[in-house]
Image 1 (cartoon, rainbow, N blue to C red):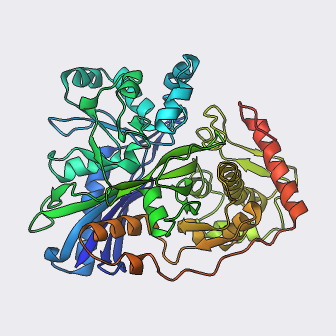
Image 2: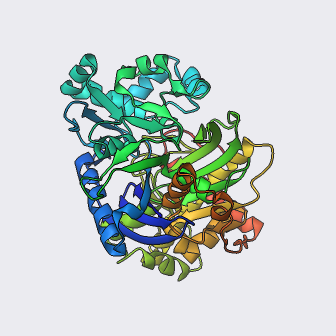
Length: 496
């Protein structure tokens, strides 16, 4: 038997088949448009994502040439805070999805902050009041699209993250559900009661009728034929946010183990166990890792808006390099950036800075600056952001991070991986397989479907840790230069 994992990420949709012992059999990817404008807004077309999901699933099934009866279950993992609103009766979205990177709802959160709501919002949801999270994005849609407000009043509006949207489409509108990992990133879930918080909903001008049913990550969410791809309905046995799925697949199951997932952005996430542990450093946030076997685990996390997206920008927008693989090669071709830094605040900065007004800039260029220096500065920017998040996590935990597990496409970049280890001054362990978000969702589905293979799945061979190899004085010098670069482009003051 096999599991079909749907990994709906910021850049595209993957359909991946895993065997019952957790081996990846085949994968197909379909990219979708990144809809942006000069204001820094970022959108996706929900219908395009849905059609691409069907396309990727069909293509991967054709590749393996196995009967649909061999698919025991479907697992969904997804980009998280991206917000979709649709008409419950027709299944038609009211607008493009507002992507997690998009800060258009800043006025909404700034108003709430001015009204003194920040502290109790954080106490209940674990999150900072920020346009990054879904609640303000839903509120923006309701306030700016008249039809959305009318549907909300009539009880016909659905507000969901991408997992809830895909489930709704897969089940032909029969299931409107989400799991605790995704719900905890909306800023509408109470982390103590594990239910939608009515006062939070009211704060953002929403109500329970618009929200999906929330529950465990390993429950039976519904059944689907994927628009006739399967000859009989297949159960959907797992839904989990992509970063949380990667934490699970990285075997970060005990308190104070952590991972960084390199995608469009980078999520640095630490498991803190079965009880809430509010962070001491206010620049990081608290969420739910997953709900499995009727028990939830909690995490602390810092999200970086731009990591892999920086390299995408170098390739596709300013044409500084021809392909992503060239980035690490050019970065390694020079011994330093010669004082150049890139602050990648293309749509503001996420954790641990939380400055949505900041904008990107190369800082420190001279007449001698060459392409290689700019590319190296772009790569180094990823590591500096991760180091700042790791510092914030360490400040909130009783023991410093001893090892950082890493996964995602950028782990193939040898220069970047060594520089991350050097700057955070912690060994990193690179995942043996790239698709850990999909793997984590598949593992949850396998467990939910009754396969007693947890120990085998989570004891897969790992690469030897990559250890830091940088002079402490040089590390301090580089990080001071980064802090100074931040001060030149950010609105909020940065700590020394």
